[in-house]
Amino acid sequence: MGATDTRRARQSDSAASLTNRQLAAELRALARSSHVTLRRIGRSAGRNDPLWELRVGRGETNVHLVTQLHGDEPAGTEAILALVREMVSNPEANRDLLSRLTLTVVPRANPDGAMFARDEDDDGTEERVTRRENTQQWRERDSRHEPDYHTADGPPGYDLNRDFDPTAETPDADGSSQTRAPSEWTRYDEDGETRWRHDRTYRGYTLRGCGLELAPETAAVADSYRRANPDVAIAHHHKSVEAEGRGSETSSLLSVMAPFGPSYLERAPAYEPDEPPETIVNPFIDAETSRRSLRLNSFVAHQLSSVGGFGRVTRYGYEPLWGSYLDALSPRTNAAGMLYEVAGQSDERDSIDYARKVAVSRAAFRRTLEALASDPDLGTVDENRYFDLPVESGGPTNR
Ligand SMILES: [Zn+2]
Image 1 (cartoon, rainbow, N blue to C red):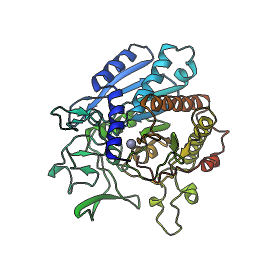
Image 2: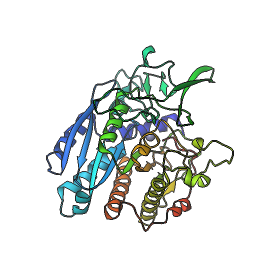
Image 3: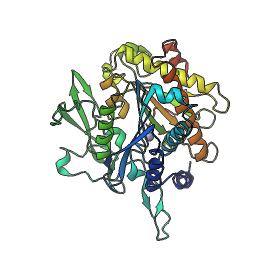
Image 4: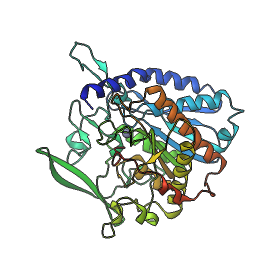
């Protein structure tokens, strides 16, 4: 696709999506309901804008859900807001959800990226174009080297979904500092520039590309997660507009992905008998949690595939991404993990409009929550059916 098309599509998403101020107003309106509590859990690195946590319902099953870790992926934020609005404006019809689940949402984890603006067309005024990263300088005192998930391309910033640290232990009761596994740095060259990948050695495994939790947004999401102590962890993304090979014939409106551990090692797309398991699956996800994760993703994907208008739902081939929300956090509480990616493809041919992305995401969220409310373990679902879902053709996820 041409750069101009990409730009046009991004502008249409960003023009359609709420500003941070509008989002705050929407959240405050929801918080008037007795079913909802709203908390500010931090502030963004660049704009000092609030980070929010919304808690809905008082049920036994705890679900933690994060949207828009990437600032240019706004549909999940508005989808979960719309769903919560439905739930609290008609609590009778949504009684099962409200009484059986406690839903903790961090909507728009990256307010800086969501509002990112620059003079794209040289007309002397800035346009809100949004972007993936937050806006934050790397400083010498932050880490031994500048990690490769920090970009200095344009205003500097972090990819927040590479900044989580799977080795950060829960703080002591007195709130004293967290312990971290030892850091190692690997130097490599990319396009003639020196880059540094950050790895950690942890419980006998080498975790390549581990986050450092240097962004305040990442730390706030991780804190929210620890407090919620969830049974299920859900992340929402758009499919990358930069990925190659996504054609309209082969890619889907929605993809899911279940993180899993060594008990399903041989089913992993990257399986090689001689490779270390931590490069193929997440060794900290136990068999039972893996099973719940596969069941949940499979059940929801198959259900959505049979509903008119969605087409087939695909899965991303899973491999661990150590700085990501799901791989870093979900093993800590044995949470079943679920990733959604809604089509963000932006050339003229297969682009879908923003309202449709929101509608697809909202329907997916509702199906998931209903499934969890009716049976949190999904005991009747065969987890192996997950592997029957077609693998997304667009290559590895850029989640
Ligand atoms: Zn993303």
